[in-house]
Image 1 (cartoon, helix red, strand yellow):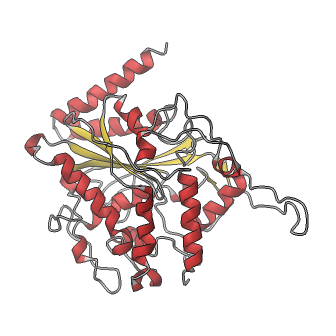
Image 2: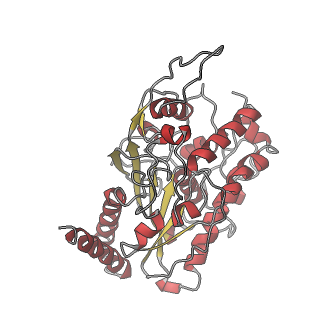
Image 3: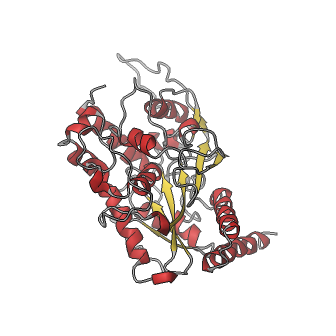
Amino acid sequence: MRPNPLALCLFSLIVLRSSSGLLVSPPSIASPRSGGLHFLILPGFGNDASDYVVGLPRRTKDAADEAIGDAASTAGSAPLLTNLRNRGLSASVVPISRTDWIQVFTRGIFDVEFWKGDANACRPAFRWYLEAVSSEVRRLRADGGPDAPKIFLVGHSAGGWLGRAALGYGDCSAHADTTDGTADAPAAGAETDDAAQVPVAAVAGIVTLGTPHLPPPPEVMDMTRGALRLTNELFPGAYHGREMAYVTVAGNAVRGKRRGEKGSMFGGKREPPTKEEFAYNSYGPVCGQGDVDGDGLVPVISAHLEGEGGVPAAGGGTEIRLDLDGVFHSVDNPDTWYGSEKVIDMWLDVVLEELEKRERKGGNENELVDSINGALQSLSSRFSSLF
């Protein structure tokens, strides 16, 4: 299907609005290193790094808030970065600003493969994001030598599949200029392009939160213009699962419902969409179906990798799948989204336990294990204090 420029722009504005109500620059987000393990948050489409650092201030509840869930006051609800650090973990955010996302269109519009729907993630529309992730990983590990921390990627929304692309492509220069967008994948861990390389050996794993991992069916326009489809074709499933942990998390909060006729075009006020109707309109472009369950923006059936969970994929790895009831997609839901105080331990405990199991299975009684054990003890102390 040939993309409609106006539709693409309108879609981006909707996502930007649902991601946050403000356009702000990210504050300093450097984190002191604790050694062993560092959690790096990859922002979702339309999100700003500050959404995960300071959260969102209270704003008047409006129709858009109703559509994406209960936008309660942020008072008493810490952002994702704070919640990770409060559990004894070293963490930071890739410094992406909200306006950076406009590059998907301003750069993609001049790429013929983007218009054809065959633009891989190393082409101009998304290459800037992969380079930002690579740059931050290298910064965190610079001058660390053997004591440099292992990086664990936390991909929210589009940040999840873009993180997979960054790990999979490695050398983007081998893909950026292909005419058909389907170059052979480079060898895992190849370190030939310093500008966009995320070395597999530096990464302990990846957890994705509400990520649309699967491309839409052929009859539905692919908003990534082929980047997601080609990522899955070249690096299917838990592609690097032998070297790192893969955890995919889906929120199950809203079943989409088709919007009925409300109001009249000749008189009367047309009512705003309910959150079920908003979800229906969001799920359709992602998976081709609107009347399915999801987190309000991404359906459950799209939030996991191809194949069956726990079954080795082409790369030999396996994936841990989590479906969380009542969990919403957007940071606009401070008490019920993936990074909230009430939700984070539902997936973080699984991540830490999987990392510990992998390290002990490999016989590596090292600093990474100590870092994980410290985090688990911190979690245990937090729970004990509640009783």
